[in-house]
Image: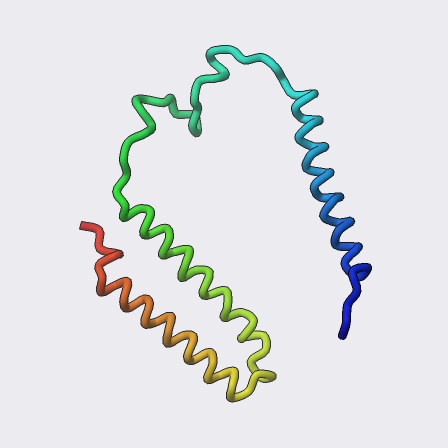
Length: 121
């Protein structure tokens, strides 16, 4: 199937409408928004708790590593949904592909556990 540039015109229009909406919204909120900048308003505020000390304290890398691993394995699980929907249509080749995918995912999880990335000592 050959497509011509005119086939993409609705996408271009939608892009410009979205960019225009974002720009217009930012402009209008800047114009009608409050302009009062008192010392109390500029003070950091977090969930009703007063700020104490410097917020630039170093965190252990374990927090970030755990978060990244969670996102990684969470996103991988999303790939199971299309397979579950098309289970009967994919047949034996789909089953083999999914078993390979799950095997690779399991190997990654075993590597993460053996490397000690989830140890909280």
